[in-house]
Image 1 (cartoon, rainbow, N blue to C red):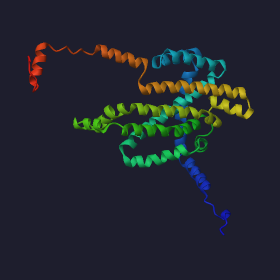
Image 2 (cartoon, helix red, strand yellow; image 1 turned 90 degrees about the horizontal axis):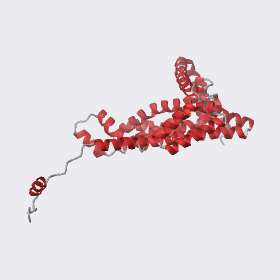
Image 3 (cartoon, one colour; image 1 turned 180 degrees about the vertical axis):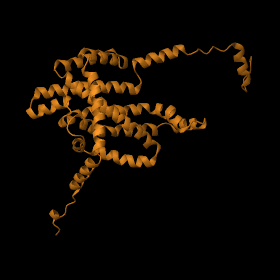
Image 4 (cartoon, one colour; image 1 turned 45 degrees about the vertical axis):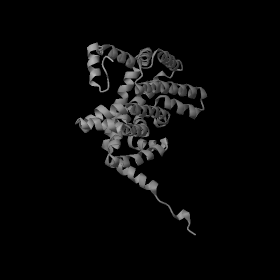
Length: 318
C-alpha cells in the first residue's frame, strides 16, 4: 500500500519561489504601478472628500435627476443623508474612490480583451479558461499576491478588485459583439467599410446594451470587494466592517453595511439606466431630433395618379 504521506507535490513551495523571483526581479515595476495607482486613488479621493458633503449630495442628485428622474434623485438625497447621519461619510467617499479607480481600470482592461476575444477564436480559446479560473478562485486568494507585491494599503485592494471584477466585462463585451446580426455586418462590408469602421460604427453601438450590462457588473463586483479590501488596509467602509467583526460591534457593522448598500443601489441604477439609454436626457434629445426632422410633403393628386399608372393591373379612372 502506498503511503500518501510520502507523496506530496510542492506547489506551495513553487509558488513561494516564483513570488520571490518576481519581487526580486521586477520590484521596480511594481513600485511604479503602486505609485500610479496610489496617485490615482489620492486624486479621486481628494475630489470626493474635499468639498462639503452637501455639494457631493447635490451633484449626485443632479446626476440622478438627469439619468433616472426626480424619484431616484429624491431617493439619492435621502440615502446619502443617511450616510452622513450615521457618521460614515468620509469612509463612504474613501470606498467610492477605490471603487471608481478600480472600476475604470477594470473596464479599460476588460472591454479591449472582450473585443479581441470576439474577433479571434484563438484569443477566445486562451482568454475563456483564464476567466473561468478567475471567477472560480475565492476572492480572498487575490489578496495574497497583491499584498506581497504591493504591500499593505489601498493599492493591493485596487489590484485585487481589478482582477476580481474584470471577468464579466470581458465576457459580456465578447457576447454583445458576437450577437450582432451578421447581415448588418455584411451590409457594411458590401459598402466597403473597413473592419475598424464596422467595429466602431456598427458592432459597438449595437452591442452597447450588453457591454453596459458588463460594465454594471464590473462596478457591482468592485463594490463587493470593498469589505475584503479593508482586510489589507484599504480603509473606507471595508475597514469599518472588519473592525466591527473584530470587536463584535453590531451597530458599527450595520451602519457601515447600510452605507455600502446605499452606494451599491446608486451606482447600479445609474449604470443600468445608461445601458438601456432610456433616460430623461435621452428622451428629450429624441424628441428634439424628431421635431427638427424635415417633414415629407404629402404627394399631390397628379403624383398619385402617375405612380398608380406605373403599376400593372391598375386601371386609372375605373
